[in-house]
Image 1 (cartoon, helix red, strand yellow):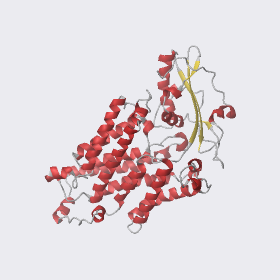
Image 2 (cartoon, one colour):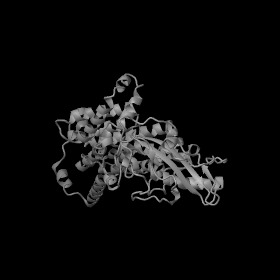
Image 3 (spheres, rainbow, N blue to C red):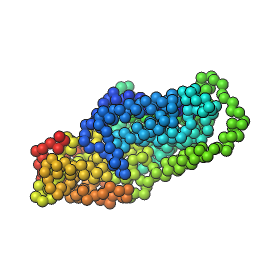
Image 4 (cartoon, one colour):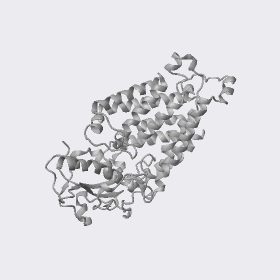
Length: 465
């Protein structure tokens, strides 16, 4: 099946491009060496990052694995190595998380199961007995399912009041007016509304339109234009190009052969008959695929089980294809208190964390609580505080709303445990959406909201050393 082969090569190529970009832009140093602290997903706190050189070697292995998958060289081993290395980097630093990285990890896992190397691969040349003239059709369908996930669930997630009021695009799009050619157009007030509803309709309709042969070319053209626009406006790494290439899996199975004017393969009848009764190994693989598909249908919906707005609480936000739904302006201060003397110091988080880590911690109460353990250790070992208590003043403005406290500033965050359950200590979102986004600088928020900051001094010892 030529379309699966193209998918394999295109996916490997985009991952290789990602590796090159990470190494060239110094992202290894920024994400894994610039800070002693690394954000973790709940349940994966045990995954530890290696040294800078170690993480560079992991990315080099990832690049080699991508080449192996693309060439179909020792394909199964290469696919396993690609999945392990890519997923490891994502788990070692949660600040790296983006939806398309999660999708990349899922695709890498599925390619371990899909026999995408049976034809047009080095393995097919080296191991003739393992070569086959066709790839099972379920391989194509499970890959189609993976590409459909971000579209379908992204559309469902956009069915909320903020998006239907063109938020957060009414904040983001006016910031892009300096772009060449299209910049003046983006200053028009109707543009965010058109983009919001256009994105909603595309996400909801693109999959059925791609599945129907008569609308497929139109739908693919719309998808290409959508991803190109995203690339220009938001510069989101490899995602637009990966989706442009991989969405071709919805076309006819032999479209690459037709494009190259190669004759379609004729599958012998005995091969077709044999495929109807798959061997035990293949039935096991199909069972794993079935469980995987069922899990991916249910898991992204878990945020509905939590009270409140997931864009505010961040509960169930990750791994749910809730893409570009919120903009958060932030005010965050951490304080450590000596439980014996009452001495309070402000923690210099700007010197201890990267800007990306600060943004991810500030918007997520769960990550605020997790980081408090790290700050407690620093306050104890470097500043000399005893019986340390950690508190924070976290004020958030969601999608242009008036800012409000995320939780009680008097709460000792060391008493909070990470859990899958709802974090009842998070204050509910009470501020309504505004006609015009809130634009008061965040440093003025505490005084404006009547919030007294603790009287604290910056510790003399630099906690980042």
